[in-house]
Amino acid sequence: MTRLDSLHALNVDDYAAADLNKIRRAMNQLSAELYAVVNGCAPAGEWQPTTSDPLQQLGEVDALLDRLYRAVGGVRRTLRNADEKARQNYLDRTAEPLAADASG
Image (cartoon, rainbow, N blue to C red):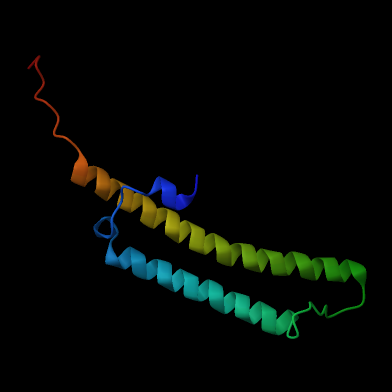
């Protein structure tokens, strides 16, 4: 199941404009980070390590991956938060009122 399959009942009104703007900002930050990594490490489309030492190259790879994981993670968190709020808005919009408590 894809993310969109699980959100099929939601509509645009369930998402707050502020949350959609946060998603756009997070994607812009991710795009900028990807651009910086590619231009800094692989300007010709191929990774260029800054050292010939294989162990230091592994360290470079780890640092690059950490940088990318943080950027992607930021987008995922922002998207997850917006989706959670939208689901709650959907539930608030579609929930049936509870019947009065018969015991009281």
